Image (cartoon, rainbow, N blue to C red; front, side, top):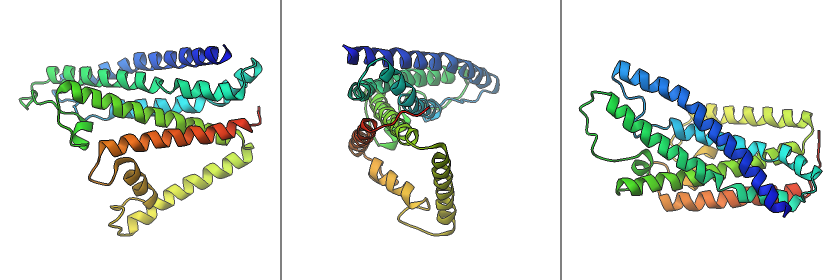
Length: 255
């Protein structure tokens, strides 16, 4: 029963956050559509990445806030560590809700943006950023579903990654959090600096670690495979949640 209550608590909390996010998003979008009409220039195109990027950030934030405050609240109310972790795993389908909302928003805003301009370009041919990236040809419905699937897997992976990061940092003292954060930032910056002054064909000029992520998640650089992407997202989600499970079993509650 406590597991069911824990799952419902998470869904109520994060569905409200997603709803608020979608509502507030209308403000800048309406402004962008007004600018589209005034300047006769499409801000939202079928290759636009704005909505997806914002939803990706939100899913990561949801993951971060899903650990420490909820963990402490559940322990105070007699929810076991096992149920606390399992309730998060069962809340991952929120990524599907977010992906569906993002896909609907994207398609509606793109269509409205096209209607507001006088462009004579080809607007009957249907494509999508992800269908183009993965070289996927299909009907508008199939492309719509493809975007939902890709978004769902990405958002669930980012939720689990944010959850893992919060689990790791929550167990550290403030001083060590600062040291680790500074070291990570410095190493990332240095990796980009080094890659900019070296010629690496294997990584296409990007840091080796970033190239490795691209190869792992997409199957390569320049050539991308949707089945490879699906497998990679599932593996990462399982890996992140599994490590988080190990951490939460021994976690010390800090203020």
